Image 1 (cartoon, rainbow, N blue to C red):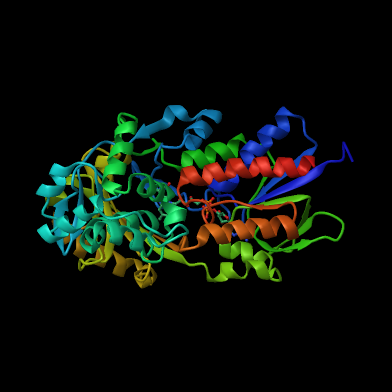
Image 2 (cartoon, protein in one colour):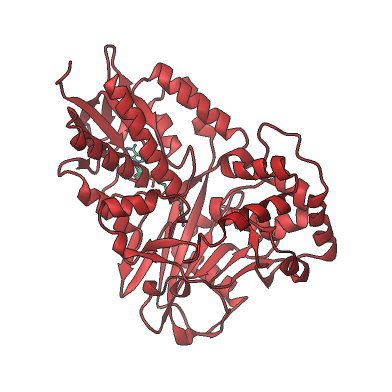
Length: 467
Ligand code: FAD
């Protein structure tokens, strides 16, 4: 059995699958392992949700625009493939929140909407006096008795009150997850907040302490990307893979477990591959459809994923007469707006627009309000312009508008997600040995979390192949 070549097929060429394939190949080469690796991608391009469009001197991100460098995965991967000299950090700029239709500066020192400095919280007009007093109850309220999981809404509303949640915490979280905070799992999104509450009782005091410990770590702005966009990372990893590893236009329809050992993978184009081990990094709905007779995966059909869209608009700088003095704003649900967030991209990322031009990027779509994503490009452009005109004085049309729809793209980690995922892993191990899963549907949506899962799944796969 020793020298017989074994086959590993990684399915999905998003950042998770690319990371898994890269580190798997690195180990295969380093240890001269008798493993043949193939990365199959259903579409004709790599990157999945990551899509950068370079156009007339603009660097336009259709999907994610950056990552938070709190975890080392993205930077390590960039170093591995020699593109770390192209990394850039976002510039600092003011952020705003639109609540009840009014624009307010984001209170200084708030972390996920929780105040860590008292003065900006007391002086902001974003909350009424009653709202502020209710939030101060956090100092005296007992710890939550829920040891298991609870919704983010329940957790935050209990500690901080509805007003701080609805005007600040909810829009901030919507900006990240496009979810419904009253359904979303605390333990799958911010387990550390539960720990802080259990340890310090007060969230405000605990977060303040934690923030003081990490102060100075993020001097270079909060986010990072590459001068030619996130696609640089995708292209870099693809190029670093051995020729022949990547097969595009290979959409998996079904995976069958063979009696002896291993799997056959059927593709919609009629091709078939066999594999000793399969690493599946597609969204969860796709995973379930590959194993239609595995009832333990049935629940994945019901696991929600929100549809969102991004709209990028290029303007000449003369087109905006009255502007906001900041980089971005988010919108609370209690405001009569269709957009959920907006970034003055040319300010946050000076490399993203030519001199004298502005690049504005807007997000649309959130849990419970997704139909907007299905409107036509023209309708979407009109709605976005109407919303923008409520806060800035626009004279003239955008020079271009790029609308990108992401249908069912933001997996929702609802209450109990962690437990269900654990059970899914256990079932896979018992019933489909050698099949591993990773990616944004399971242990984090952010690019760093996807990269981390890509790294972790390599360890599991190699261990299985050695056993
Ligand atoms: P995907 O990127 O979805 O890749 C899965 C791949 O599998 C795709 O290429 C798909 O074509 C392929 N596939 C599917 N089915 C099959 C099949 N049957 N056979 C073969 N291949 C198949 N994260 C951040 O960190 N920062 C951000 O700023 C940020 N902004 C975001 C903005 C938007 C609009 C969206 C949608 C997401 C954003 N995210 C952000 C989240 C992050 O982009 C994603 O969670 C991450 O890119 C997902 O990577 P993935 O590889 O797990 O999945």
